[in-house]
Length: 439
View (cartoon, rainbow, N blue to C red):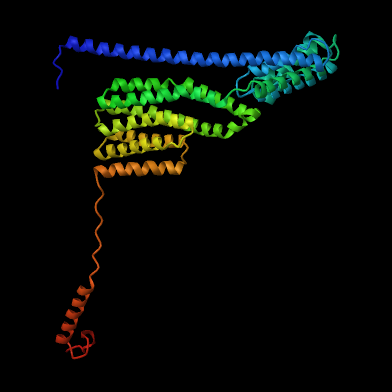
């Protein structure tokens, strides 16, 4: 029906709808930012407690095991190990020890050859940093510790003898204490951290797939563009998920109390990879939806329904995988999604609509894999469901039925008929094929 409202009223209505969408977007982002800050506060608190505990234990053990003195580097090394990026602590500890050893070797060698002085200090630090960069290939703990140790050796060794060995033991003790605190005393719960890191991605996917379904149903290109913008704004969430995966892998590797989580972690890591693919698929579908609406392509109702089923499947999959249930409800929703996509394709779509159908089938397969299904099985399930959906709209042509086998009575009548023809046409007792040819 045509809109009978005056142009001024229609413009005001569009302005109101735009303002309402803007308010909803701002509220969503502010709520998401609040949840991110809460998670960051929790991580900050855990790391702060770990660093303080590691520094205290390292200082105590240094005084007990290495003798009295100012063992500054032991707690510093422990704090450096804790405060580094989660998932890189073990590697950072080894780089720290390697940097100290490299700085001592280069510093002592050059001090023996060149002597001590300002320009000798500059040469020692230059060569130590260059050697560390050649070994590491980039900046990091190894480079920093090599340069810092070279400075101490070049400047303090002439007046204070015996700096080399205490610094090595301080570094070894501090790094070991940091790893022990992370692995034994205060290890994080890897699955809890992973679930919280993946929560924003699940939330965005569920909400935006539902929004995209409604936008397709109402043929609203502005809303599909909004969905695309919000899906593109998930790069930070993906980065945090990858960092958390690295940290969880470190914990289940070095923390004995978390070793029983290894299998669960690996399953979660595989699901996270397919979840990222699903997010990329959703971006592509939002873009194709926008283009299809711009070109006024036909959008069957089944296409919008399939998009909604996909969003519901994401929600159900997270719940089932979180509690460890068999994802049968997820599989059912995915089969419905593929079935509806097949129906939409059979009803008739144009080029971008066909891309949407392909994207739905690909997303359904990725979601099945994220739920733990093998790739071949996932593709087979989606292909079978999509074919069933197409068959509901255009049933396949019936195969030609085989001719029924004649009954015994029919065969007897046929033989009797052939015998009668033989007696009439041939000689007595001779079949027709044995008669001599007539000239």
